[in-house]
Length: 214
Image 1 (spheres, rainbow, N blue to C red):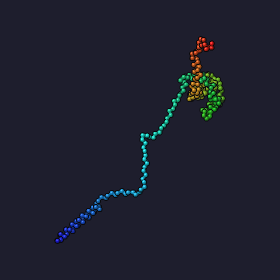
Image 2 (spheres, rainbow, N blue to C red):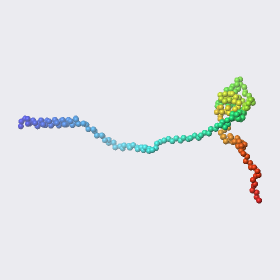
Image 3 (tube, one colour):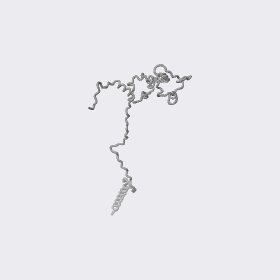
Image 4 (cartoon, helix red, strand yellow):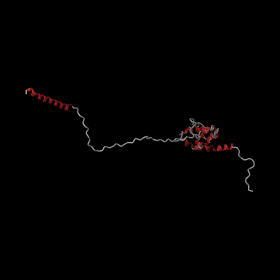
């Protein structure tokens, strides 16, 4: 064998070696990295199971508010019938009735806490003098009270004892004196009116015979 023939196997071996080296390098360096498998936990403690919640079906939480309907208030309007109340004699001559409700101690209702708290000279003047109770002129002039109590703002002017003007102008309605029992208030007047207008029911002629024993 000549030299060329003996070198051919060597060349072939070198080429094969280079191919193997290149293949090994590609496998080591060029192959994409594989994802790591998840690491399994060795903890064997039980995992708590969340409590199951049951959603309400068809019902919602509502607050029930009970509203009590107010009863209608009956308003008494005396002036619908009594259109001339301020001209009635008991109302015009009201001066003599003041002490029946307000008492005779005038200082207690004019001076001090809870009253109009008048100054002394408002009634007694200056220099002071004691008011004199005189009969006066006109209806109702029976007491010193009538020298004041006209409708506001003329409180210190004469009222002439007109109870309607004195009280209604200060927000005191008829019911303050007469009460609210309409039936009792009108019972006597209605009874008298019925008696005066009712027809006579007395029988005429001879009375009916009674059952006499034979």
